[in-house]
Length: 211
Image 1: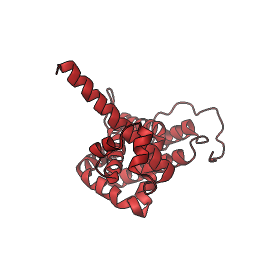
Image 2: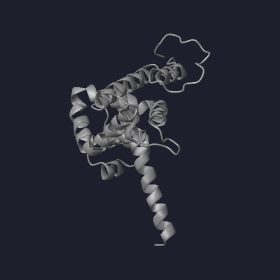
Image 3: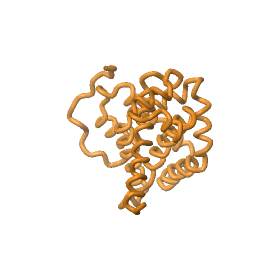
Image 4: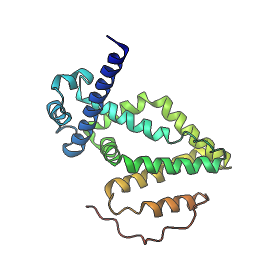
């Protein structure tokens, strides 16, 4: 088999795997974890049921992968971009990357929020968080270092409060995607932490309503 064919086969396998994960995410969101079957996931992904079982022998493994990807995306948001040297620049970058990531992956965010709280799936979330313990601690330490560099008296508490605020924002974005004042909230977060925010958005903030 030529190297080109090997690469093509690998790309096809990766595409199938992505389709399976996307289908699982959609169905978990629509029907819940318990209400979704492997056969339904295969049908939605347009692949054979056996292929789903080949990549993910149990439905729990699909969920484990989706939650792991969600945590990886959150953690990646703390990686400083080029030019982010000062603590303020790093903090501004974390805010922007986290909010943008959340807005672009609202389906994942809704799923994660549900799975963290549902009795049937919370144990899986705990296991995923446990397997990512080292990565999560590095994420926490990176945020704490930002606040330490900003002169915070208690960087650990600031990290917890910062994440609580951001996660609250993400929750509201997930519940009210059509009416959430994204630009105004971003501006408020920047001013809350004393970061350069520019002029506030001209549009008035309306009321949060589900659609």
